[in-house]
Length: 255
Image (cartoon, rainbow, N blue to C red; front, side, top):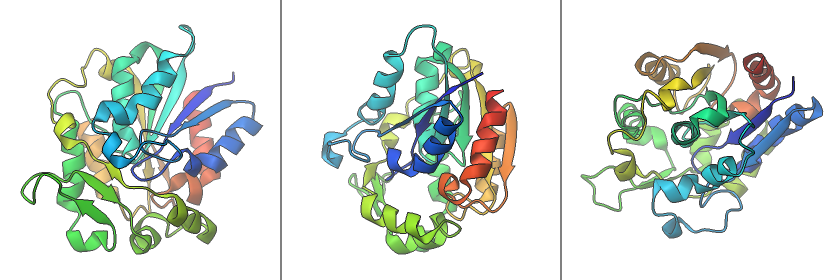
């Protein structure tokens, strides 16, 4: 049976990072929709025009709202895209067959989604972020408000197993994105009877140097999914470093 995969990028990236996966899925007869979230990819909005998490996820929400009532999709979120798909699973629990978290932030329904973002920052020393920029528009004692990946940081921690052409593409295309931690600190954004009712699968990228394996395992422990898959040799950009393996994992999940 053919499936419809909706692919959601992480911070700074856009629909463009899924180009290999879209090709593989469509060549096998599946539908693949890669979306740009607010202020990402070729979405025209500037950083200051995407002022809330609702603004940021609005392209995904709008797309799912426009699907026929009976159509069900497999939502695939990468990195910060795990937050976006979680909010979509809450809103459209009846339209999502499974939520796939590809080395992604995976919240639970018992604590605010901001917790998983803050856990990443708590485990990541400032020097590990190298030339990436994290801004604190609300002051140094408040949570970070936006982030922009730097080329050296991407080369060593995100793309170190990916083809050099993909790193060059990213250097040209990444944008600064908001983190929306104030919005994500609200209680009950995710509920057990909606978000919690959707099957979840986590895909571990074994060589991810941005969200290291122990952090990925922490997400799994705090919000246990139905299944966990592992991709050896995958850096943070799994869809670029190990596209065939990710494709195979998605097909297994869809059957």
